[in-house]
Length: 313
Image (cartoon, rainbow, N blue to C red; front, side, top):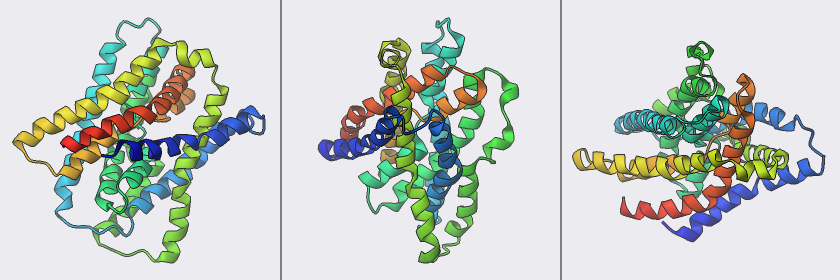
C-alpha cells in the first residue's frame, strides 16, 4: 500500500480534532461538552453509521462463511491482546490505573475510526466496510462485558443484555434483514441516514480534541503506562493479528481482503470506550484519557508504516 496516501488519510482524520481543541482552549466549550457530544455520538451518529454501512450493500450467501471467520477472529484477537496486556501490567501496584491501561490496550477504535479509514483506503469496496461492521458487533459485545470487567474488576457490573441492547448493535440488527434480503432503501431515506452517520468521525475527533485541551501535557507524556499501551495496541495487536492470519492461511486459505481488513482493524488506536467506562464506573479517567490521546496521535505514523505490510499478504 502507498505509504504517503495512507499517511495523508490518517493525518486528515486526526486534524479533525483541532476545532475541539481550539474551542475548548478558547473557553467557548464548557467542561461538560465532551460528555454531551459523546451521548450524541453513541446514541445517534454511530448507530446511523452502522446502518448506512449495511444498507444497499449487495448480499451474497458466500459472504456468510467469511463473516463467520471475522466474528471468530475478532473474539480470539481481542482475548489474546487482553491477556497479553494483563501480563504486561501484572506488577503495577496502582490497581485503578492498571485496569484502565489493560482496557485501553485491547479496545480498538473499530466503529468511530475503523469504518471511515476503510472507506478512505478502499473506496468503493463494500466488502471491506462490511467486514469492519461485523467485527464491530464483536467489539461492542466485548466492550460491554470484558471491557466493563477490565475497568471495574467486578463481574456484577456486567449486564449481559448490553451485549445486544447497545445502540450500534441494535442498529446493525435492524439493518441486517434488509441486507440479507437485498432490499433497496430509497435514496430519500438513505440521505438523512448517511448524513447522520457521517457525523461520527468528526464528532469523535472533536471530542478527542476537547479532551486533549483538558489534559495536562506532563500527564500525557510522563506516564510509562501510556507508552506500554501504545506498543500493545498499535504494534503488538496488528502484528499478532498478521501472524495468526498468515499461519491460518497456510492451513485454510483465506480471502485476501478478509486478511487485510482484519489486519487494518487491529491497527486502529484505542477507542474512547475505555475512557467512557472509566468515567461511568469510577475508574482511572486520566490514564484512560492519556492512553486514548497518545494512541490516536501515534497512529499517524504507525498505521501508514504497518499498511506497507499489506503488500506481503
